[in-house]
Image 1 (tube, rainbow, N blue to C red):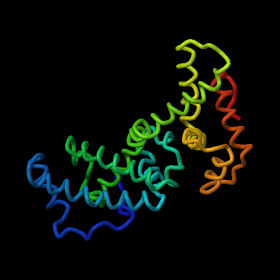
Image 2 (cartoon, rainbow, N blue to C red):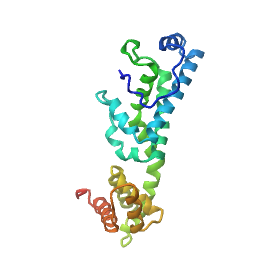
Image 3 (tube, rainbow, N blue to C red):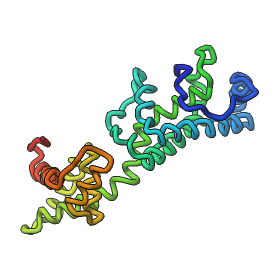
Length: 238
């Protein structure tokens, strides 16, 4: 169960009612007004906590602590760079909360133990954090993948400009480019900035603003690496 310190930033003032006083009526009538009231309180509290972490660059870090040892799969697919992008972290946090609320209606208190020393609010925040892998995948499919597909299409068209490829070869190359970039957040940014019309020099400047110093030559080399890896999947990414 979640520890007493798992909820992070301070949320709204404590309720006058105890956790048991809030939860007991909701257990009796899972779709009644007490359940609705409790859901609303949990939503407001968790929203403030998650947004606080998103805006302070701690969302993924807190999720990693919460899911440690709980058998939650997929966290490795959530890039650490998520904590450096407030806008993206906020969008993912909303998805986490929505997913947790849907689960709340299915089995709201099946895993909350009043004797554990954990407040029901703390338990719900932990439950939200455990949604991060699924929420990030949802965010990626909705916000990133479509743009990455367009960027991959442009790069594939350039790579095949001197040939007359068939539709299957074009589709395969586009898919491989997307796959290569899927696990590398930095390459994703390069491809998306390139899609927006930035030059190699301008891409290097943008990347250097919020990360390690990047040169124009490095950007060119990274994009060429994507092309080489897409042409031949056996080629290493080094």
